Image (cartoon, rainbow, N blue to C red; front, side, top):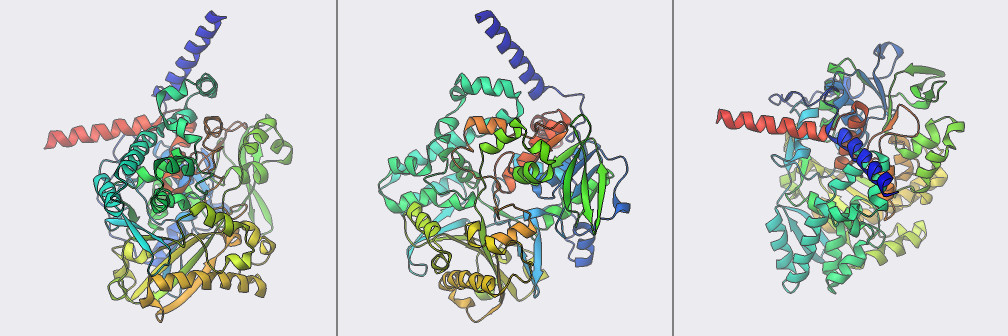
Length: 608
C-alpha cells in the first residue's frame, strides 16, 4: 500500500511540475515586450465608439476563429488579449451596447460616470499587476494615483463623526493607525503581521487552480497544504472572530473591518484571509484610470483586433453549442428575430458561473453531477444600489478630493448590516448602514480638460435583490411609478448623507439617478443583481471550493474566466483571466510574465 501511495504521489508531482513549469512549446503571449510610448488621449466620442460600441453583424464575424469569449468584462478581455498575443483569433461577444462590463462608463446630461472601477491597488512601478496591465494594453493605459489618504472611514454622524484616514505606503498606513489609536500599538502591529503573512499566502489560491485537481485534492485531504502558509488556517476564520481577539476597542475593530464592502460579505461571515488580500492590495496606495474607466477596454480591444479577432456588442449569447461528443463547439447569438450559430474549437465564458451553467448550457447537461456539485458549493453574491450625481463646478471650486469615504452610522458593522437586511425595504431606504462615496472626476487628472466646470460623485450601497425583484421583467426605462418611488426613497436617504459630507454641492446638483439590483441584472447580466459574482463567504474560501472552481469545466473545451474563477474586483477578475489563458494555452503565463519582466529589467540595467 505504501509503495502504491508513493508511486501515486510521484506521478502527481510530475504532472504538477509539467503543468506549472512545462508548456514551453505552447505559444507565449509574453515572448516580447509589446509596450510602446503612450499615445494622446482620444477624446472624440465617435472615435471611441468605433472601438467600444462596434455592433454585432454576421459580416463582422472573423473567419476561422480559434476561440469565442462570452462577455467583455476585464476577465474576458484579459483572456482574449492574452490569447491574441499568442497568435489566436478570438471573438468577444457582449450583450450590452458597449464593451467593458463593469469597466464601462455612461454619459448623462454631459456627465460621464463609471459603474464599477473605483480604485485599484498594486499599480506601483515593478508590481506584477501593473506589468500585466501594461502588456495587455501595450503600455497605453495610464493611471492617476489617489491622495495619500486614499480611504477615510467615518463612524457616527456623517458631519461630525469620528474620522480615520488610511494612508499610502506600509509604514505610513501603520503610523496613521497608531496616531488614531495611540493605545493600540500592539493590536495594530499584530493585525499588520497577520495581513502580510496571510496575503502573501494568497498565491496558493492560484496554485490550487493550476495544478492537477487530483494533486490539489491530495494536498487538501492530507493537510500538507497547511504546511506551506497560514493562509488557509485563517481562511476558515471570520474577520469578526480575528479582530475581536486583537482588541476590545470597537472603533478599531470597525477600522480593521471596514473594507468588507469591496466584496460584499459581512465581517462575521467573511474570511479573514480574503480580507488580508484586500488590505495588502492597497498598502502602497490606490490608482484610478486616467481618462476614465472606459480607457481599460478601449486599449485592450485593439490588441485583440490586431490578431484578427473582434469585440462585438449587442450580441446576446443564447446558448453554448455542443458537438455530438459533448464538447463545446460554439455559441448561438440572437440578432433580432434570428438565432445565429458561430463555431469555434474553444468557448470561454466571462458570464459568471451561474449564467454559464444554468442559462447557457443545454438543459440535459445542466444536471450533470459534476456541474451540480460545483453549484452546490456556491451561492449568489450581494446586489448593490449605486447613485450617480452630476454637479456643476470644478474639483477646485467644490473642494473635492481624490479619496474615498466609507460612512457608517455606528461601529458595530455586523449589527448595522444585519438590522438593515432584516428591515423592510421602505425602512432600509431611510438610512443605509454602509455608504461608499467618492468623486471619480476628482481622481482623473484629465477630467477638467475633458469636462470643464463639471464634477461627478458616485455612491455605492448594498441592497438585497429581493427588494426590487418584482420589477425584473419590466422595461428598463419604464418600470412603473412604484419602482420609481422606491428608488427615489433610497436616493433621498443616500443624498442626505452625501450632502452632510459635501454641503457645498447642495445647490449645484444638476443630475441624479440610481442603478438598482435589477439595473445590474439588465446592464451587466448578473442573475440576481450581484456585483461580485458568486458570494465570497467562508465556504467560497475553503480550499476544496478554491481547487474545484477553476477555468476548466466538466464540458470539454468550455472554460470559465473572470471573478468567479478567483476573486471579485478588477484585480481578481484580471488574474482569473490569466489563469484561464494559462489553462487554454497549457502554459503557466505567470512564469512567462515573470521571465519577460526579468528580461526587460536585465536589458535596462545593461543600458544604464
